[in-house]
Image 1: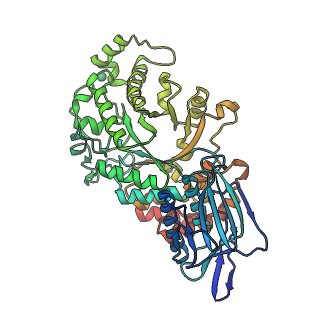
Image 2: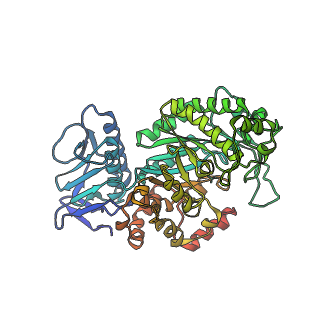
Length: 539
Ligand code: ACM
Ligand code: ZN
């Protein structure tokens, strides 16, 4: 696929790349027979004077060019020939639309917004050949017209089960940017660890951020004796927000409640139904101990935490979890039952009174979120109680859950465990091309939905849960190259997708991963098995 002929032009050798990148742009026209644009040390990336965002994007592009071709270009505001000209074009209809025009004399990159221009630079990054200084890089003459299929293109990382440093998260944000992903869903709290500083509740990180050890494998009776610890200060979280925003990625924080709260309960036992004592679990699963749904102090805790979270994160969406919350404690808890009576909740055929108590609890939290002009997001279990249609649902339990959510009128993000959880052990056992094809061919919009209901599917997301992901090696092995398949289902219109062609385009992307030193999962089965033996970890 790559037009990789090595040619010389005057003194300098050059190699021409290709716009057949991942995710595939919607429209590519190569001008046959025309000379490519050769990126030289004399080339300038030009941005509109006074536009700081475009200047930053121009500097990023200069960095990408240096990285792949070894050529150091200039950055400035002068327009003219031998330029890669970045500009805004209000006539482009979609906020993430961009257009590239390449001739031998220069490159025009126009975007509807600064975000769109940034997305265009990701395409340029991937369209350049990887010459590493052995030849100049050139771009083929032609045009690219591009815009995304879905407005919401997400990736989730769980830092509760294992902690990942600020620097490493920045690298993962770079991986997301390279794939045109525009939402980083940061799963910040878990039973096994609370990872964000909350000033009003310091014990959340003094106690809740450290567990004493971890089970060695699913179902094992052995524990490793090694503490797992770590949290982000509010300043560090702001640094991540800025880093992502510079790459036009919104960070959506998740505080998962009222279940998955054992680290918080260990820190403040009075928030539970029994009063504890509680211990931070050293194994994984779903635990009966959850926040007390009837206790006013617990509700105040949730509101206080989310207010500090909203001070840190400007995201329009605030995720409050809602998944996997057993009701066995609530059924017996006098405080929960008194609240159920006070609210007049009665079990119906579809919704138990305890499920309705969870909906009430979450709707109280939602008021706090809405009061600050934000929108609540939750996992699909929140549908067990009849939430307001304004709530955005992240449908994980099955593709059917996304159909139900869209039918009920909720903005819906599709992230089914069977296809888009890259950490699922049995999915990880699928090796080679099949593991990527399974993601690639997943269609987020079910054809049983009406045209109106289809509009409720606002996007798709990949997730990495880190029960069995302790390090960057495993993280990257799970993420890449399935994230390539994900990005194409998020970005590219389905009629343009083709798995065989995708595999050809993937060759260049894997070379880029090698250049970056990322530990992608080889499509060669033998290599993947080697990884398993080497790490001796559950997949
Ligand atoms: C989930 O996987 N419990 C959202
Ligand atoms: Zn209770």
